[in-house]
Amino acid sequence: MKRILVAGEINVDLVFRDCHAFPLPGKEVLADDFVMTPGSSSMICAMGLARLGNPVAFVGWGGMDSWGDYCVAALRDAGIDTTGILRDETLRTGVTTSLSTAQDRALVTFAGATATLSADDISDEWLQAFDHLHISSYYLQRALRPGCRDLFARARLQGLTTSLDPGFDPDERWGDELFETLDEVDLFLPNDVELLGVTGKTSLMDGLHRLADRRARTVVKRGSQGSATFDGENLLAGPAYPMTSVESTGAGDSFNAGFIHAWLRQQSLIDCLRWGGACGSLSTRGVGGTTCQADAAEVLALIEAVP
Image 1 (cartoon, rainbow, N blue to C red):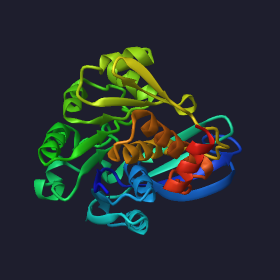
Image 2 (image 1 turned 180 degrees about the vertical axis):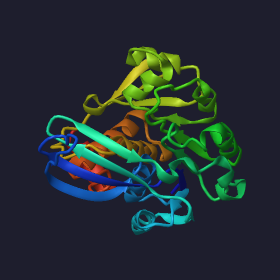
Image 3 (image 1 turned 135 degrees about the horizontal axis):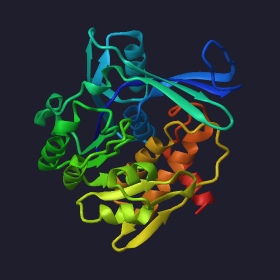
Image 4 (image 1 turned 30 degrees about the vertical axis):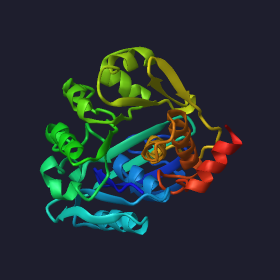
């Protein structure tokens, strides 16, 4: 099995589900359900990969606080190597509060140590122990961004394959520096909103065409519409699997885990899309991004049931 290193942010999700309304200043509302779960795009993807049976290690910064203790314990309990996690008592671990009603969802995030990890924290000696490097939340990891292209280049020289999920740019500036980074990446995994933001285009096809000359293969997550990538010059569409969804936090990160899992095993593109779609759909069975992530047997059963 390929050894996977996930470099990213450490975060706790506090999920308030089925709020009776969104709170207004000076007022209080009730929620019908609540769960505290490991959060962050990076942690959810790492735990999804481990759940599928992959050997995974995590590198990132956290605070010497109870939230950091919780995150490290959750990763360790998932079978993930946490020796690369760096902690500092001057930092505070990130926290996201998710408030959802039947109609919509709102998020409040304290980024904490998210922007602390830099490319210099990941040495060539450390990379040599792995076969694949995955990075999520490119726009949130502000200390990592300037050295991200160089980190991917160093990983390639060490023989690693690589993948990148950009996440959303909260400033919505997007910028052009990501394009050159994609020439050092094997897999680029935006959702449809992120694809249009990165490329400045207004349609899926135009966005994919804009990135067609980069080295990275772009795989777009489209929620209930499935997924898509170019197979040469043709659009290859991945299925969306019907599921009674409880809550969709982190479904795209679980998609990443499923796609990477199949891709590292040299499965066909359509099978990689199927694995990604199945993992994303199955993760919505519970509240929070990691509470109901699928194992390999569950994924195969769903793919066979809904080919």
